[in-house]
Amino acid sequence: MSTPDSPTPREGLPFPSAPASFAATPPEIALCLELGQAFQAFGIPAHRFEDALSRISARLGLDGQFFALPTAFFASLTHGDQHWTFIQRSPAGDANLAKLSDLQEATDALIEGRLSTPEARDRVRAILAAPDQWGLLLTVLCFGLGSAPAAMFFGGGWREMLLTAVLGTLVGLTAVLLGRKAGSSRLVHPVAGTLVGFLALAAAYRFPHVSPQVVTVAGLIVLVPGLRLVVSMNELATANLVAGTARLMDTVMTFLSLGFGVALGQRLAAPLMEQALQGAPLPLPAWTILPTLLLAAAAFVVIFKARLSDLPWIFAACVLAFYGSRQGSAYLGPQFGVGLGAFALGLASNLFTRFRRRPSVVTLLPGLMVLVPGGLGFKGLEFIIQKQLVMGLDTAFQALFVAIALLTGLLLAHAAVQPRTAL
Image 1 (cartoon, rainbow, N blue to C red):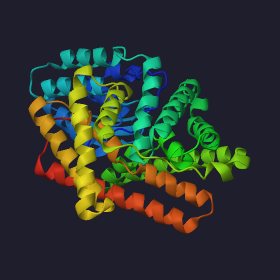
Image 2: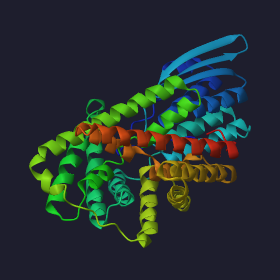
Image 3: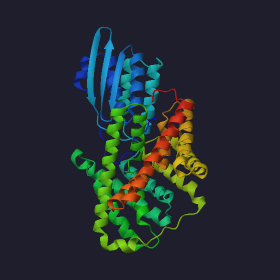
Image 4: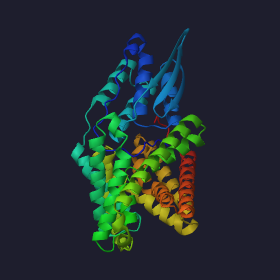
């Protein structure tokens, strides 16, 4: 599985250019290191990262050993009697499915011998230097549109969807403004949590039949690290213990930052809380599910910077994940049902990779946004902050159990149909 975490809409961090020390190395060595930086910037899990670079180094006539961490990697490369050892730190980047697809095509062409080393280096540099096809303003707006369907998935109605769209857009704008500098970017989660926690209660106080809990969780869903939780558990399951543990701790810190912000926002709106909590959502009819999933798929195309031609595939993945988990829940219960949805999604994504020769993450990532247990985990943390420890721990363990079921479904899908591609 190759699953970067949900991106935040911010001014794109430039991909690191090749260090000056690369100039003194053979082109094959430099190509491996540049590809390693690119893979890490896109958040590829450790086991896929190491496997892809091992295959590439073997194709280049190198004996390569790689060790990946979430923000750095070690490379030990040998050619004849010469040996190089590198430690390279790479900043985490945003998900960019279009550029990842281009990298997939370049690395496959290199492994199959259709590209020479100089041609591959030029291709990789051109891919990373290309501007994003979607503008920043559209991306921020799509964060609002991508948050709105989550309100329906959590049992909300049209009021919750409209309010969530507004709050999701504000969260995106907050991430843009604070994400411009490295120092202030660490404040994105607590500030966004405070903003949503306060405004959700204020909206529920002002409008009837609005659930502040649904609006809060759905409004922050773009920042909830549910995907990162699944990736970390995937790394732990594939014996990448250091990378998995580091990513898991980063996930925990993100949950805590969001929870602190929501608790602060709710404390600021404490006089409104008693009346606000009386609102109950009015769920939408069943016929609205498909249009809502189409809206989510269109937003995901922009959020994850996919190609416009991928919209039908992404929509199909969202539909398959949603109805697969719903059918599984009917037969096995909600905790196990998500595993069936993940199995169906993983199977379809690997078949997509085989026939289209594109990264499985193109369909897997948007589909997982419908499945990931981040909302449950966040609700558990919210209960704990409100000193409802029993409910909080129970909800948190449910989220962990759902994540394990989801991961098991993906692993079974990978065992049934292997993608046969570099990424």
